[in-house]
Amino acid sequence: MKLHREFNGVSKLRHYLQVVAFTLVVATIQCTFMPDKPYGPPVVYSVLIGTFTWAIIDLGRELIPSAAETGWPHGWQGIALVLVGIVVGYLAGTLLADTLCVHYFHFYPAGSLISGADQRTSILITAIAGLVGTFYFYAVNKSAYLEGKMAEARMHASESRLKLLETQLEPHMLFNTLANLRVLIGTDPARAQHMLDRMIAYLRATLSASRSTQHPLALEFERLRDYLELMAVRMGPRLAYTLDLPEALRDVPVPPLLLQPLVENAIRHGLEPQVEGGHITVRATTQESPHGPLLVIEVQDTGAGLPATLPAPGPGQSFGLAQVRERLATLHGFAGALELIAVQPSGTSATVTFPLKSADTP
Image (cartoon, rainbow, N blue to C red; front, top):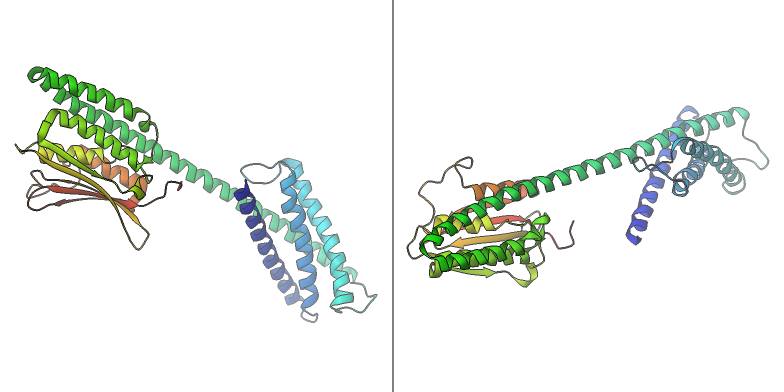
């Protein structure tokens, strides 16, 4: 509530400064057509009339129910507010300007009156300027509302796209796990039972997290631990892993299931082809860039390594890597990247990089 009041106050101040600038332009134009008269009086009259008119219309909108898409009162109430603002603004502004110009600034001799022609001109200018200014603020408010709705629609579209990608990824992991489970049922029923228990625990732990588009990095690492424990049942001592998450990065928001495809890819293409298996390390760090801090998450394995020639990104690449790249592009555009490099003497490193956001960043 306090933040809303502060924002509303800043908005009102910005509106008033725009009104003052507009009144100075009106006074300048008026003096252009009346070069024989001083510049001071038109400025005083224009600024004061504009100030009173703005105060009645812009501040009066806060007291009358307004349309969400424009910020202006509905129907006849909006028209009446504008007319009252222009009329009262002209009368009050002219009265105060008369007093200042005659008794304070001494632009006119005491007791002198503005001619009828000047009054008619002033009334016409006030009416035109009031209507033009009102239409301008009406159009600006409506444009801001539409832009906000477009941004909200884009956000919902991105969230829906991320959820779609995640729902495609979940069955992919389950199918691979069930295929492995089927093999174990025939060769080692006890391990198959243990693996099934692990899979049930994993699915139960990930059910609530899968309903959101982002969760803390600590939960992502916990899901990785559950998944690696599940894979360790099948691979036994051939799989070892290390999860390195600094305390300062535990609450950083990330998309669910962002890292699992990289770990799954490391197991399937790196560790499984080797008789002795290998080790997987998942490490989170930060990195500075010209556009701000970046979150860097590396999944490194000691497996068979990359082939001599990598397929070009597209239909030939693995499903998991394609999903990670697509999710990064949906969330961060060109600011998100996935890089695969060979590690010496053997192994592969998959590094995900995207802008670092705090836990309270929307």
